[in-house]
Amino acid sequence: MRDTQDLFPTRLERKLGMFERIDPVVHCDEQQRANGPLSEEELDEFDRKGFLSFENFFDKEEMDAFIQELREYEEDEDLKLSEGTVLEPGKQEIRSIFGIHQVSDRFSRLTRDPRLLAMVQQILGSDVYIHQSRINYKPGFKGKGFDWHSDFETWHSEDGMPRMRSLSCSIILTDNGEFNGPLMLIPGSHKQFVPCVGRTPEDNYKESLKSQDIGVPDAASLKKLMLENDIEAPKGDSGSLVMFECNTLHGSNINMSCWPRSNLFFVYNSVENTLHDPYCGNKPRPEFLATRKDYSPLKPVEGKRQEE
Ligand code: 6CS
Ligand code: FE
Image (tube, rainbow, N blue to C red):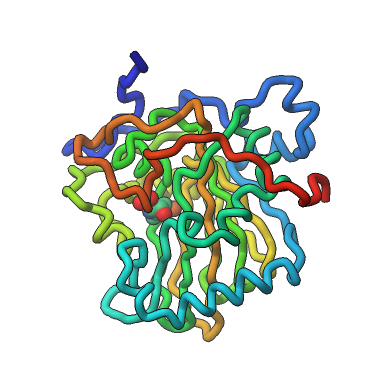
């Protein structure tokens, strides 16, 4: 019987102080460390900061097909009605499409790109599967922001993810610049777990994916971590990659520019870290938000280059 003890209590009525994470950040053994695609320096940086960024990881030409598919989604009125699509609050613009790897073969194959998979398996030290995928559109002028949060705090509380052995690959689809609401991260924040206050309402995702209220850390904790570590906003052209640890605090501002800031997110979880019942006590969230039906390890797509 698996241990289902809740090591990361959160979403309670009373405020609990932040505490040091229990889990390693880089999970691989010495052999995986030495033989994987990420260098010692890159592994150390990921361990220290809780994220790595790679400009032009994919060629712009490779991205063109994904951008084209993105444009087709934006024109698809039926898509706006599907359960995995979240609209901007009070608007008709798409905010996010969840489960993109479940509906698109092109995006499904991209989750198994050997270059991505090898890095993720090295950091997580095991085979992996997709816990969640999404495209965040953040359209020009209308794209609202995302409040500060730890993804793990949500995935632990609302999806029953037991330990911190998961990471997100954010692939930049439209150039992320200074002014169109790039992803902001607090380096080093992944080393602390910040419990959040407030019970989780049933079906919380119907609100939280539009505007997160429950699961946002308190200002004093955020201020402490910002003063200690500052904030970084890795920018880059289409095809750039930001890989960030499941517990690294992140958020982003509204998009006041005319340029969309559309990013693709693949959330990889270790096959050793599959979901329990939600620790908040609610019923499990839908499959498009949290994979439960199939934890099969991802295998690399054949015929793609392994090394850069
Ligand atoms: O609830 C979730 O799973 C989503 N919420 C946020 C703000 N980030 C992670 C994920 O997309
Ligand atoms: Fe997030």
